[in-house]
Image (cartoon, rainbow, N blue to C red; front, side, top):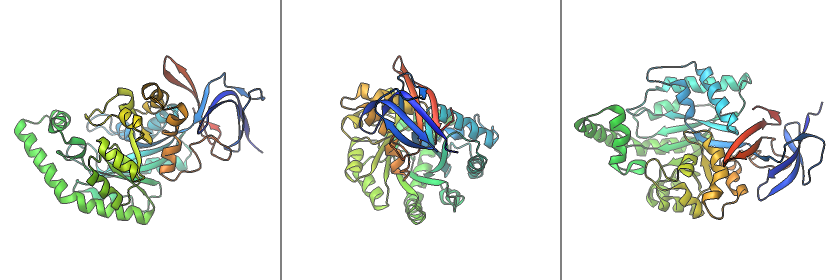
Length: 379
C-alpha cells in the first residue's frame, strides 16, 4: 500500500526561494510541491518547512556515555539519549564524531569508543533511532595510539568522514599559549612547572607522530572512499598540505587566510554554529560571521550544542548582510550532505528523501514542531 502524507499551508524553504503551498510525501520521498495552499492534508498553519538538518561534526555522544569522570553509562542508552536530542533539534542525519587517538585529558579509551560504535550499529539494525546515523572519526594525529585506535574501524562501513586534527600547543587552534593554558592547565590542575612539562611533551609527540599519522590515514581514507577533513588549519601551508592529502572539507579554519585558501581550492569550509550564535570563537580564532560576510562559509556544525544548528540557520541572516534564509538553510542541509556524498537528501525537491522539519519562530528562536525522516514522523 502506498503511504502518502500531504503537508498543506506551509512556507516551504526551497534551495533558492521560499514558497507558500503544500508538499506531498509518498513512500519516503518528496513526490510533489504545489505552490498554492488548499490541498487536503495536515495544516501547517503557515509554519516553515525546511529540509532535515545534516550534522557532520558533533562530539556530543561521548558526553552521554561518560557524563562524569570515571562514570560509564550503558552505551545503547547513551546513543538513544544523544539520538533523541539531535532529532528534536531538527537533525535527521548525523555523523557521530568519535575520537581516535587519546591525549592527556581523555577520560575515554579506544575500547570505549569501539563500544559506542557498536552501540550505534546495533541501534541502527534494531531500528531504535530517530535520525540516520553515520560515524565521523576525529583523528588526533599527534597521539601515540592514533593508528592503533584507527585500526579498530577497519571494515566499518558506517564511517563516512575522518578528520585530521592536532591539538598540541603553539599551533593551529592553540597558537596562543594563554588560551591553551586556560583549557588544559586549569582542567588538569597543573602547576606552572608541570604545565610547561606537559606542553613540551605534547609538542614532542606532535613533532614525532603528526606527519606520518596524517599520511597513513589520508591514504587509508582514499582507499576506502572515506571523505577526509582537515581541522583547525591556520596557514596557507596547512591548506596546501590538506589539498595534497586529498582533504575535501576544511573544519574550523582558525584564520581568514586559511579559510580563503581552502575556499579557493574548492574545499567546503565548515564552522561552528555556536560561533555564529556567540559572534566569536571560544578559542579566540576567526569569527564564523566574518567568514560568512566574506563569502567564505559553506557548512555549519552544531559542534557541542545540537540545537545551535537550527538556531544559526534562522539567525545568520539577521547578523550577516546578504545571507538569505534559503542560503543559511543550505549550510545546515544541502551543503553538508553533498560534502560527504549524501546526494539523496538536504533539499526539498521531488525525488529527494522526505527528511523534513516543521519550524515556527518565536522571539527569534526557532521552535521545532515536527520532524520527519523518510516521510515517517520521528519527533
